[in-house]
Image 1 (cartoon, rainbow, N blue to C red):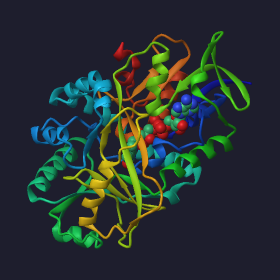
Image 2: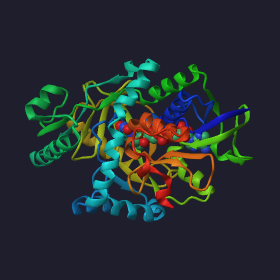
Image 3: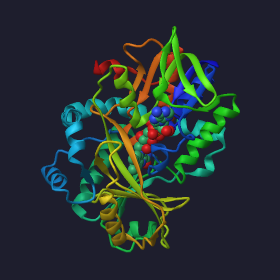
Image 4: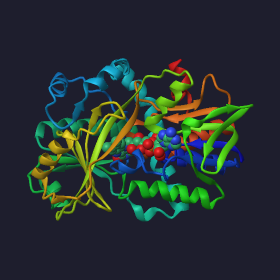
Length: 412
Ligand SMILES: Cc1cc2nc3c(=O)[nH]c(=O)nc-3n(C[C@H](O)[C@H](O)[C@H](O)COP(=O)(O)OP(=O)(O)OC[C@H]3O[C@@H](n4cnc5c(N)ncnc54)[C@H](O)[C@@H]3O)c2cc1C
């Protein structure tokens, strides 16, 4: 079987890349070992984070670092093997998170994030998926007045510089907005631009259905069977070997293992995260981040979803959901969480880069091979704009967003 381009990985990023390539007239085959949207893009908090103009930096505060090192709190967990394996990338991440390099990364990132909701809106309309989304923002809630004040100053600065919208809520306004909260809190920053999806995996599946309805082919196959073949690429699928002139790697947290076999050593690492659903009697209206404790509660189709912060561990290490246990206890202080659904905790991995910017563009040493991965904390948000940017590069069009900060070449 032949096509003009193979997209490997049908998460949010790969599926949107396939749609945008198809829109430019290419014959696209989308390949995954599972159904579309069953991995990282399935288990996240479902936020389309238009407000996330700054990439997620490595916190430098001594108190945070001490707590993380001692395994206190719910925000961070680590495996010694994970820290050892990722030490080089984490050190670079730490350095890139200093104010100056972080400000440079923010310059680029904010230009990408600016298109997040607009690009999703186009695909949602075409896919008939608006029923999966609420466009009412989400909240950072604060337990102490000092942390609230600091967050409000930061929100005001981001509003002035990037135009992102928010409401400042005091304790009473927050209690009125979210009557299910049983603990008096100091207040909230209610970001107004983000959208909340109550079944993230279903949104990817709808986008994949749109791709198929428009004539695209989705096939089950293993990306590790990728081979250069003549002037192009081929991969083994359930329907035999597929050959194409070009291929895109959109394997999220699994990209690193594959590009290593091709000789690339990029500073990539993962931040693992867990989720659990609860049959909560108390209904939240919008998702919230318990900002001083580091976990998210998001109303989902299956119940209230609690997602955890970062676990530095190898992607394939056995689950150690200690953060989930701690976050559940903290969430029970806020509201009547109810019983967890009788299912094992979900475990996923945010695909991160040391400089906090995704890797999008041509593979430096392989003709016809393209990379689209490393979208870290906001891959669900960025999928459509990332797919568009990559398709523009493949097609040789001027890109809507300056692609230079994302080119893989920067790590060579
Ligand atoms: C707890 C948590 C909460 C998060 N919350 C948010 C949020 O609220 N908003 C947000 O924007 N982002 C969030 N993220 C980040 C976001 O989920 C990821 O950045 C995003 O899902 C990455 O998408 P992707 O398509 O690159 O990767 P994936 O969705 O993981 O897709 C990669 C695909 O590659 C396939 N694959 C892998 N190996 C092979 C192989 N050998 N052969 C064939 N196929 C293969 C997989 O099956 C998978 O379908 C969160 C992440 C976590 C862990």
